[in-house]
Image 1 (spheres, rainbow, N blue to C red):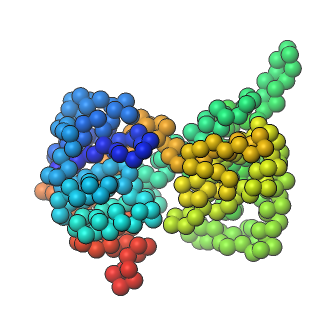
Image 2: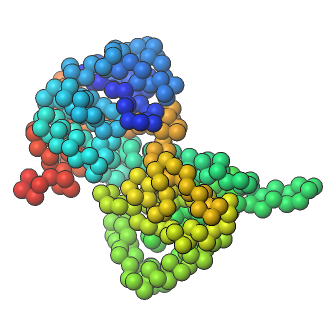
Image 3: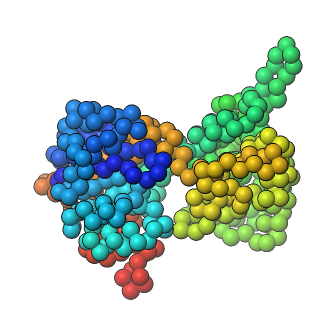
Amino acid sequence: MRIAFLKETAPGETRVAATPETVKKIVGLGHSVSVAAGAGVAASVPDQHYTDAGAEVSADGGVSGADLVVKVRRPTQAEVAALKPGAGFVSLLEPYGDKAVIDALAKARIDALAMEFIPRISRAQSMDALSSQANLAGYRAVIEAAGLYGRAFPMMMTAAGTVAAAKVFVMGVGVAGLQAIATARRLGAVVSATDVRPATKEQVASLGAKFVAVEDEEFKQAETAAGYAKPMSAEYQAKQAALVTAHLAKQDVVITTALIPGRPAPVLVTEAQARSMRPGSVIIDLAVAQGGNCPLSKPDELVEIGGVKIMGFTNLPARLPADASALYAKNFLALLPLLADKESKAFAPAWDDEIIKGAMLTKGGAIIHPSLAPASAA
């Protein structure tokens, strides 16, 4: 089949869905590849490198003749209109955002797959774009915090006196949170972290950080068999809030990472808690695109309240375009065998495979994913 990789058009988006390395491997699998001119420039990949890898470079990426079109971010309405009926489309579709784009994909009879819906199962780990990008986001969050913080991270003993180590508190111990912990530790900070899932305590400790939570009997039973957090009682929430409030007031840097798919981000740092931190402290909010873990944060804008700097980043992976693109491109490459017929190499998704079932949003003119489809269609 012919696979087209388009240039990203979202403001501030620097990533690209293919690298010369993955293009070469895709061509080796028997497919033809086209890449939009300039698609990789922001990620330090000139057009000639794609040509050398076996791709055809054109102004529009050959979208109209492609059997499968790939991007990092959701398509524009114009890009959807250019797709041929029956073609496939793969990207981080942000399905809970602009529903009109999903409707347009269905109306155009495009088989669209959302990379963020790839099931988190063992054999799909190499395809998990959410994790690959969150890992980089957690790292970059600490780097950004260090840039905003007016002091050094590690303890320094000098002839002129001792510089105390920064205290970093990570709220939410998922992929991004774990990488933030590891990065802050490497920079010499004293790190603590919190999460509502008991299993994360061991992960936090393994990285050399302190776990902060009210560890009563309710907490010990706060995780389902599938690894998700159970709703906590009002009494427990009050005890946890008091503990976190006292801890936050002593921290220099706070990084919040909690996101819930399809729902507003939970509030982890209230305005009162933010104001309790000393001047010069920093809050990095990774959930600002979904409302924020701190009500004071604004998308990609630095807010200062009482000397406390609050920064919400909507797209931290785009600040590491070369690495983010390389990882995303490999995620797609791992997925590709499930989208192509082994013999003919034609676009033919493995509809019975649980990975395709979990990630496909539209098929044959309809929205089929249970979280988005009308009740009758689902």
